[in-house]
Length: 116
Image (cartoon, rainbow, N blue to C red; front, side, top):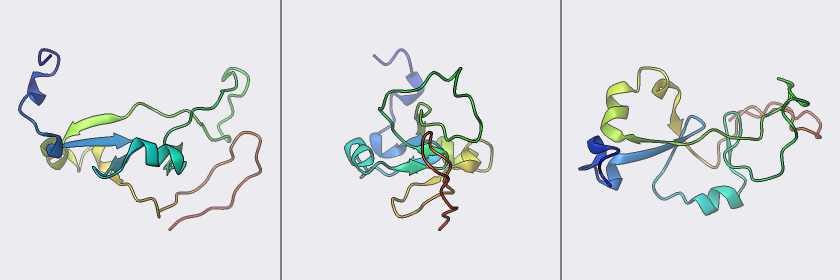
């Protein structure tokens, strides 16, 4: 139904962008591939489907959060107009070859910084 988002009624899929954890996911990327490859974003896994500890017990800022935020679907024209303004100013194109600084995952030792 077009009632919920009338501004997207005439937008084609080529003009939509999916943004997850400040990364713009290219159209040729599949969710299956991201999950299978355990893709990582700037703040941890892009998708994580394991059982979680109770956050009230394990609330420690030094430990990487393995839950992820919902993705955003945005119009490419909106992005082009607003890419200099937060939050779009933080977004960058996803590359499976790029790694970000790693955090401690609950139950694992600290990892060294890995930036490329």
